[in-house]
Image (cartoon, rainbow, N blue to C red; front, top):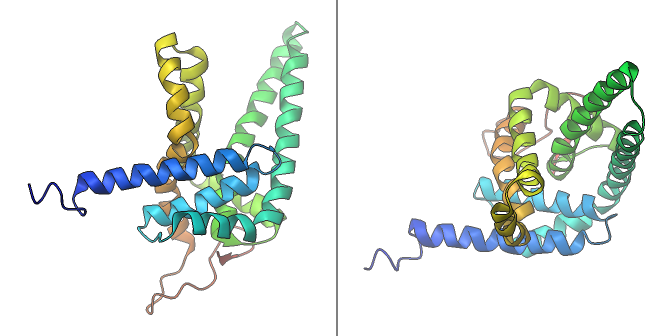
Length: 228
């Protein structure tokens, strides 16, 4: 019984982690409501969860708002670019439905390729911003190069991110009933937490090991950024 009520046992540790994910998810959802702040919210979310995976987090809420404030400007601009790109893709796919013919299939395949590239960049852009200091241009470039270089991890993370949407829109009604409350509680933070395990392994390859445990400049595929 003493072991069960020990706050360091696996059960209480797991419940504490779930509680943290719920808090992070609610913070991310509320601060993303204006849409234009989705970027800063996701950046702050990954900033905390990358530390959670390494067991380096201390104050969840304080760390979230710290990153939200520090990365707001760049994340805001990046988010506008990503929203514009996503909007253009949605318009293009909507227009393509009105046409028929062989050439339409070719254009449709081209759009699917562009959509996949968009998802690749989207998967990395906010985690990279949360982890490394760099210009907006190099953040985009580094995100794309990392996505290409670590393609197996990229595919896994895209699958983890897209699967809940596929289950919701194409799954049976019973699954949809359970997905909604789960999404509200740990939807975004849960997916980010899973992907953070892959991202930590990727980012470790760009952070030199220091004998005194001090982290200097990170070696990125493009212009080397400094660790955030």
